[in-house]
Image (cartoon, rainbow, N blue to C red; front, side, top):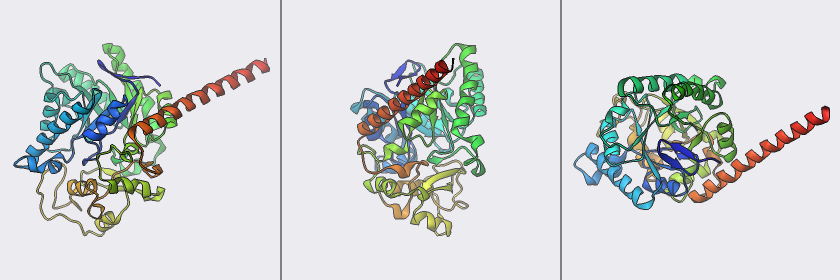
Amino acid sequence: MNNLKIGNLTARIPIIQGGMGVGISLSGLASAVANEGGVGVISCAGLGLIYRNTAKDYMEACICGLKEEIRKAKEKTSGIIGVNIMMALTNFSEMAKTAIAEKADIIFAGAGLPLDLPKYRIEGCTTKLVPIVSSARAAKIICEKWKTLYDYLPDLVVVEGPKAGGHLGFKTNQIADPDFSLEKIIPEVVKEVAVFEEKYNQEIPVVAAGGIYSGEDMYKFIQLGAKGVQIASRFVTTHECDADDKFKQSYIDAKIDDVEIIQSPVGMPGRALKNAFLDKVKLGLTRPKTCPYNCLRTCDYKKVPYCIILALYNAYRGNLDNGYAFAGSNAYLAPRIFSVKEVIDDLKIHFEKAHKNTLEKIKKQLAVGKSAL
């Protein structure tokens, strides 16, 4: 298993922990992953609710919360700490500026195309910029725009496929279509990004994300050209995950049929675990009467079936009667709670097994070829 280079940063293992809001991946989980040699990621989504007692309003509390989570993570680790900021957030600009000012190692930006992300860089900026895309076309557009407008190229590109948890960059009818599978998209993005790598003599690693759960999964996508993987759901069922134990237990209790596609107020399909709250959503029993937070640019409380920030905050606190858990396609595989170290050790072991199995197959094929001669 090789390391992962992101500009002048080097992660000892090619694993990025996916950002999970609201409150699922904060400084606790992020620092634990970073200490094991991966890239830990703090989610910005909903920090204003978690830190609402620290400021006069939601937006100010978001900034206070991000500063505090970055500070706490840096106290716990000398490893790489990133921040995930959804483009759909109303305060995307403020959160990007705060992450850079607080010297987060990386900003991961998705749920939309972060076409202007480099404009937030300031003199002496050390924060790496990473878009999350779902197609080779999106990767090309971002590389072209960033280079033309800001003379900057992505430090890494995360490619999130349709098996991811949370918000998906696909139409509902594309999610199960083989033409939009991560296995198909990764080589396409690698090829597209290679054009910019060669033209500008800059390495731009591509990382695979979405439904990746095992060391065998890791090996498969690295064989397809990815330099690493982003894993989220598997880190939920760890002691260090920042969510309430009831949230983690919902993963452990889940069966394969409990993982479903929902329509999010963000305006994108999402993958979540079935529960009583989502049943009430379908019956139209959860419609918000006001919008106290104005957290999403794409949300009109008069039209949406529920307040997503409140639902996810409730779930993070363990109140799943009034919220739900986003989850990747393989989230139901979790048998119990592990430590982050146990998860990463297991990923390493099965990655190496997959590698050895491949070498054995090659040896056998060569032996058959020689005997035929």
